[in-house]
Structure formats: C-alpha cells, structure tokens
Length: 301
Ligand SMILES: Nc1ncnc2c1ncn2[C@@H]1O[C@H](COP(=O)(O)OP(=O)(O)OP(=O)(O)O)[C@@H](O)[C@H]1O
Image (cartoon, rainbow, N blue to C red):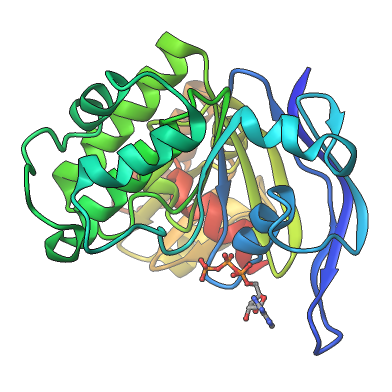
C-alpha cells in the first residue's frame, strides 16, 4: 500500500513550460523515500503540490489511500512537513514557538520538552529564535513538524544549513522515527551521498521527469550492472587492438581500458593474452561506479 501516490502530475508556471511532466510517485507506507534531483529539478514543486500549497493543474494525488482534495483536513491532521524556509516566530524562544502550536493541536504539554530533547535542542532556554543558527532553526522546525504526532513526514532538504555532525544526528533521528514510530518519511535532497545511508526507496527527478523509482537495492543493482573491468598497460592502444578481437565493446576510458565485467577465469585469460603479446600489465581490476555516478549518469543522459 502506498502512503503517497501521484499519477501523471504535471505543472506549469506562467512561462508555460512544463516544470513537472507526468510524475507518478509511489511512496510505500513505512518507507523512507529519498526524492533526489539537482537544483531546479522540480522537487519542491512536487512536494508543494502534494501538500496542497500549490493548486494542482493536472493529475491525481492520493495520501493515506484518500484523494487529497476530498479529504484535505483529515490528511493534513496526520501529516507533518518542512518545506522551504521554516515559519517560526523569531521573537519567541523554542519552547514558546512550540507552545503556540501545542494549543492549536491540543497535544499534551509534556510533548514540548520531549520534542526539544528529541531534535537536540534541550538547552536553548531563554534564547530567542532570532539568535538561533540556521541549523538550530531547522531542528526547531522539525520539532514543529512532529508536534501533532504525524504518520507521514514530508521534508524538503531538511539538513540544509546543518554541519556534518548535525546531518548525522538528523539522519539518526529520522531512522528512529521511522523504525520506532513507523512514520513514513518523504525527504528531498540534491545529494545522494547525504541520504543513501538513510533511505529504503529512491525517486530521481530531473527537468521535471522521474528518471528512476525503486528500492535503494534496485539502484545498487543498477550500479553493479554498470561495473566494468578496468586495465592499463605500457601500450594501451595496442592492448585495445588485441582485446577488441575477443571483446568488441572494449574501449579507452580516462586513460584506462574498459571491458565488460568478466568472471575470474576470463580475467586471467585477458591477462595471459596481453602478456603473450609482450605487453606489461600495470592494473587489472573490476571497478564499480559509486551510487553518485549512477545518479549523475541518469541525470546527464
Ligand atoms: N513560483 C514559481 N514561478 C515560476 N517558476 C518557478 C516557481 N517556482 C519554481 N519555479 C521553477 O520551477 C523549476 C523547479 O523548481 P523547484 O523549486 O521545484 O526545484 P527543486 O528541485 O526543488 O530545486 P532546489 O533544489 O533548487 O530547491 C525551476 O526551474 C524553478 O525556477
């Protein structure tokens, strides 16, 4: 069952250009779904449409199995979000900010110190939000998003402005919320490396088109399929000529020769063949693209 499902979601701003083109997003219940794409890809626009912050032009959006337009209030009650700049009262403290919303949501008062502890802001006391760093504001905004005990969290680049330690802490927090409280999390980022240790599912968007959607495992599978046997010798041009008789797909790549991934016996045969032709083999190894290069490959094609 999908917690969020969009079907053929398209969007244009005044320029008339399609910013989103038939996006069919499927976020499984209980997942941590990484929504990835470079700057300007259309991530925020998609998330704003899902949250009803932008008026939908075409396509279908369902959340918790319900059509968004028909069940807006019920859906929003079970959802927490952090989109773009957090809206906080800068002349109030962290606890005062939460207190205001605690009254709106009518949740227990004890939830405030609990949440401040959870997001790593237990000691800000009388400090006003105007004196907070960007990272502290991000943490407080996450506390705000968690106040109504949501079943679904939608977070747009939530680690923006955090230092490396803060990023790790946030990642741990999101993991805990997912594992211990079963909260489904949709999180956007332009850096795969930042979320690959966190997510169970990935969607990759570029220029308004969804280029890939699947489990992280599916993406890793893609990575393994794109591995290659790399070698270098004292005369790569001659080695290439020799190898192309058995492997026509062999090619030069960044100063090395690249062949499809081979089994050990075939690798040994390649080595023997080159030695028999009097070549010196300096390097012979299977190299895997890292996930980041798979992402860049998808985006650049
Ligand atoms: N209100 C708007 N009016 C016109 N164009 C807009 C508006 N909002 C976004 N865009 C354009 O839509 C495209 C997608 O923007 P969006 O903010 O959704 O991308 P993004 O993937 O979230 O990027 P980033 O990581 O930089 O936030 C961009 O080309 C942007 O300039």
